[in-house]
Length: 143
Image (tube, rainbow, N blue to C red; front, side):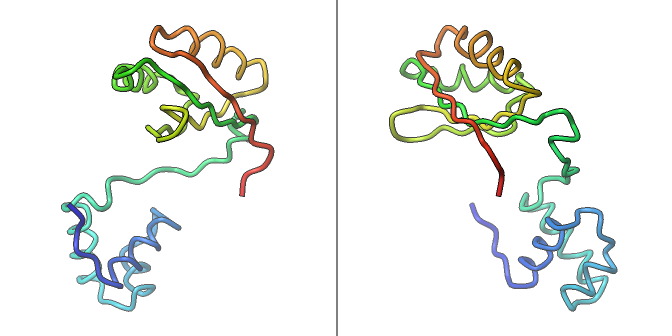
């Protein structure tokens, strides 16, 4: 169920997305509310599950992950839960989703190079028993 969010909540969320390490004082100033009000609102957003955590944003190239691709998977009927559970253990998968259309799952992956991508797709993904086929699309540049 969606939480009731007002403009101030949305402003706080936007500011935390930009800088998850911002102080409550800075957040309060940016949202034009008191520090006490800021603490209360951010705590409520955590408690209601709107804010689920914080993460470091990294540069994939500097991390040695210079190649990005979307990998589409077709899986046997009713196996998406099993396949999804296995995919959670593959560190190159940055994001995945169950989708409609000709494919069942879409994965956004990052690898070191083309050889690593080939290994991921041919050796690890296509060797899964419930994976029927894959289709890989390289990402030339990110927006």
